[in-house]
Image (tube, rainbow, N blue to C red; front, side, top):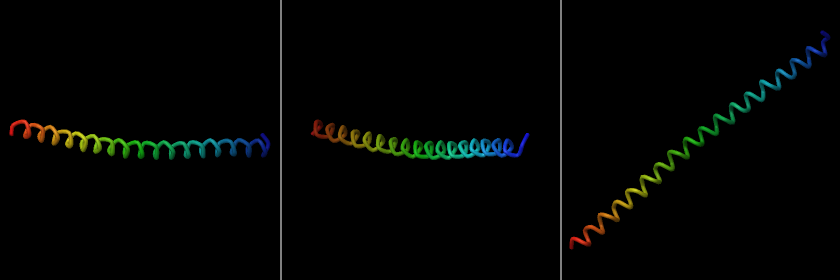
Length: 65
């Protein structure tokens, strides 16, 4: 094989590796953000649930009075 053929193979290999690195980084940051969003969602749901429980308790107290 000539030197240009080797150079082309090296170039294509380097581009494939670069694409894999970029895709891996994108997937990493996607899941990192996804995990953060899910934790925030759980906190919002827990807060909403506690507020609803407080409202139910207040209504029970008002009915009992």
